[in-house]
Image (cartoon, rainbow, N blue to C red; front, side, top):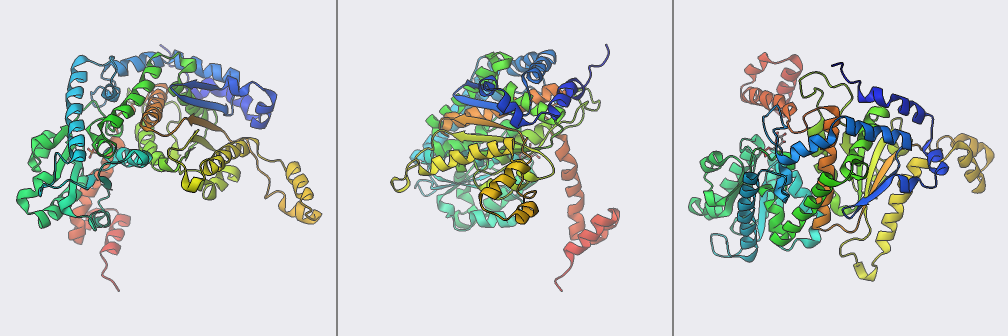
Length: 543
Ligand SMILES: O=P(O)(O)OC[C@H]1O[C@H](O)[C@H](O)[C@@H](O)[C@@H]1O
């Protein structure tokens, strides 16, 4: 069978047509554009009317999704086929939040383990499981990195108004300064340490776990340490070898990828912070999005729509930058969480069969909350050489906003700014408009001529806006699941495996080789001159 042409080639006629169309004109030519390019579902509104495409281009994207088997791939994932081919694994994070698509055995083991870790969470919160002196725990330190850190960090921050349990702390970096900064000032007698690692082999986590264990033992004595430790892992042998009692080990399975594991026992920090009931609401939110993803026709299917926008940006417009801007301070760590979810999933260049990918894949995801981002990197978004595509997230309400009776004041500014930015990015301001505005301000003609080019905005810069009601556990679950499935659908269209991460291995291997050379610099002779030079520089005694 002849090979299918690339997405880029198939989209080219539409890309060529759109290249000469300015977003300003697309918006002014079609009063129905918002209705045409927005959908509501699952309590969310998705508006892509400021993406640089037209109805014909959109139809061709939907056609690609149908033709390239997105629906079959989705069903295969949900029912637990071994779609992670390079690791021979199923991909069943959706089963962690319910649903009857998955194999019964998986659903049963998930239910049992969920009962265990949620009971543990509520017992800690209630003081029924107490510290070694019998008093309740006041602090929890979660030690983990990557998927065993980013999700809990993000979610605990996002749901701050719902956090009424022990205070949560997160230790991830192998940099000893992180351990010092997190542990200093905490009382070991009041602190529970969770060691979170899917593999339980991760250097950073094991190093920090040993440090925290020693820190506990110093005050409590060896005999009491066990009561202050618990582990979240798929590797029961390694947690036992580390000395954590089996009733304090909460497991999950190889069909849950690290960056998709917040819904499993890896979510224990969140459950400790918000309690089992709200954690269930968080799972239910994600499940609602799973059900939408499973059932909604492609043209109304929000994760599919978001993925097609991603394909359009990357393969038709050849964009590389993808900024995620939550106009919600509590989603401050959401961009970092998405960074791992998206870039570790789709940062691949070979197809499932090992042949080179036909299309450019993956985008550089970054972001900060608005309005802060407006005062840092938005300059480049508005006038920089390269176009960055934006996802803007905003709620209709802020949970608990009422500082000194000024409810609504802040939020009105927040909403106005979100709308102003995407409008400015799309429409821009022409040289003529700039000149006219400056003249209106009474600026002298020669000044206008000198400054107008600097004050002109090209516009034509795409964005998608996601509106939700308020950031509660259910909504957070929906937003995360929306992006999870978006990333998956893109991977299907690119024919890459979103669920492995071989690209992180080489650096780990080399770190193991370099570690001895930092103790004995003679071993550095084996390395390239640059690495050798840097080893010498790092080991130099202070002048
Ligand atoms: O949970 P762990 O096994 O400790 O893994 C932690 C992280 O490290 C790895 O290098 C992977 O890149 C991540 O996908 C993973 O989430």
